[in-house]
Image (tube, rainbow, N blue to C red; front, side):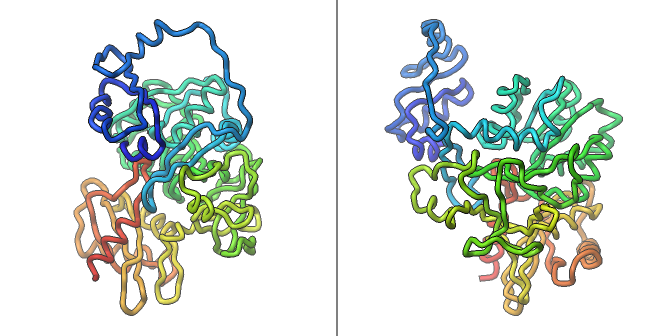
Length: 427
């Protein structure tokens, strides 16, 4: 919190009584912060009360006239590759995001739609993929935050409040998939689930159809340029493992290191052509990072993928997640998807572990499902399970069972932390 407030040079903050102590603790380290406003009945010296301000506020409201490219907000990245960067967005970003929200939610809004997400509204996934677009269309959003995601509680909320639409990060869906017999215990009738941030894979899509009664639409984007690829079950075929096609209004390609579009089926970097209605203006106070984000007119995402002749994009992995093993370049996504199909695997993360002979070997960190006891025989079984389904060079030569995986605040697996751990172990 101190990093973001300091980096953004925030002059005012609105908080609640529960979080006020956190602000007061770091306030002396924030010379730019002049005004602190607290909601509720909390009284504290040097802090303004929201109710008092409202009571004495003006009844006049004069909107400021803004242009499309005028600065509007800073949204911080989740920091998977270093300190979070502030993505500086323009006023056009809300209207620009609407097709990317409407598409994977099967032409949202419809009558009786009602949105919820466990994603924090401080991140672009909660704010721009759920809250603001819903309000734009006059659709209510359920406000509920827990300290930690609980899959049983998620089913309870969806059933109790009649949630029709949800943005669910893949990690949340994987946890919900482990809940036993939810259909007979909870009565729900959802219309759409959109998911993004990690590849879903066939296992989760099949679970969505069987348990949730719908096709989960995977979409893709990032804080800097969001919701540019997606699936829409009502107007196209959802193919397991695909990120979908370019959302109308966006030009997306797979490019090489010089920024040239790659042939179909060839792995390259996902890039979005500017100008684009959802593309950020710049990284706040970081011109070099902004410059490095582009090659010519292409905004680089740092994600590797390939595109087929039908326009579907297929995620391979982050540029810095790619495993180099015996001359092969291996992405973790396909291996993780295969691992999740094994009945003993709850969650999985795949990284490259240093190896003198192969440069790197494929290593899998696995969180077993509840009630599963890891054994050497299970390790062998899982290795053979992958060998029989993927190329010979893709199976994990090492498997380590863990109780949890390192995650960002937005629920993305931090493979770089696991890889760093492996490097330190083998020094």
